[in-house]
Image (cartoon, rainbow, N blue to C red; front, side, top):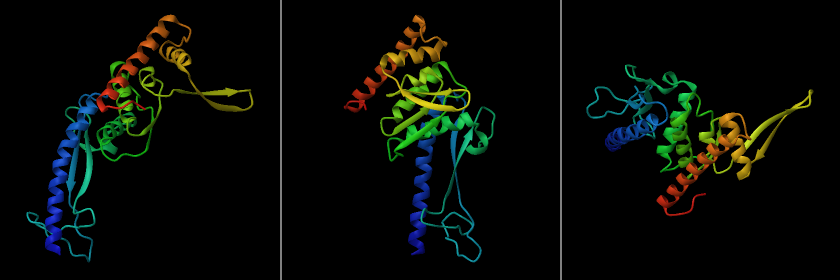
Length: 234
């Protein structure tokens, strides 16, 4: 039984290394489109010593027995090379808060082709970016929305334009009590809100034209995705 277990564990480790290389390349490509041009994702696969009093599993090519369990003999850790000249480090230590959100987005976009969570919530995933990078974030969120429900808190019109539904959260105060409200926008109200996000002037004709341009771009992207999968977008 141990011999069979060692053979299966060895095969699983080899497959993890193969899949890890492909996965890292794809996630790194996504990161470089999300205003992290010099970032790279890596994966470290390690083995643990068996706990005291427990016999480890002997694997060909390894000097000492290793701990094993239902998932094999490997410990897997994601590493981030945040910029050129940096040393790869665990994501939790190497990434800032805004970068963590973008890394999560990149991971989920790549993983969305397989099993995925039913709902994702991104809060300020666009922190510290703008312009073209913001449009790319909007595109990827929309792509993820093909296979899951995606809720996004954003202050960027380039991101908000890609949403299927646009909700505005606002606060009101009567001097004593402050309350929050949520309003769902129709097409015309959405143009005004995007104009406000763009220029702070919802009645500006130039801002409204730019807002409509963003919505048209997002609509064109949705049509492309719909034709690519051969069915109407949600």
